Length: 173
Image 1 (cartoon, rainbow, N blue to C red):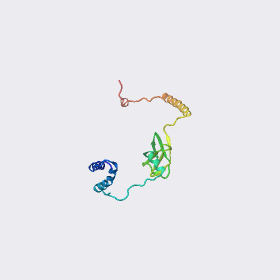
Image 2 (tube, rainbow, N blue to C red):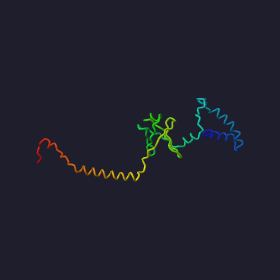
Image 3 (spheres, one colour):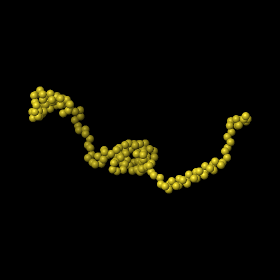
Image 4 (cartoon, one colour):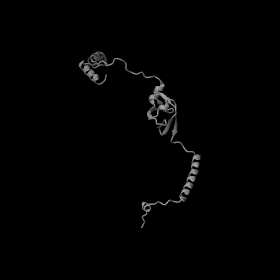
């Protein structure tokens, strides 16, 4: 009993001059009967419209994880948490360009990408990957080669740029 019935019950108890719990409990069943007869409204639909909830641990994990929708690009990729996620080209994934997928981020296991209940295989390309010292050394050699090419291009003659006056034969003063 909430709000209105509580106020009405208090007034009924006062009018009946009841001040102890036993007498109040005796009055309560009769009060509820009268109250329901007066204010009850029949439901518009008599059927049970509750949906059954599967009682599985998997469903509970899905409810308690972080979920997002992501748009799939033409190359079957999307970005999530500063990483590029690339879907593997399966029969289901081939037609997903331009569609939205559900990303489930669990606390205790890797991401799960789903589309219409299908779990899609993927691999992640991280933008935060570290560069090895070997790649840095190769890049230094590339820098030396680029400096050499730049020096050779500087030695080339520069073509004289003619102005419109020069092209028209007008003398410069």
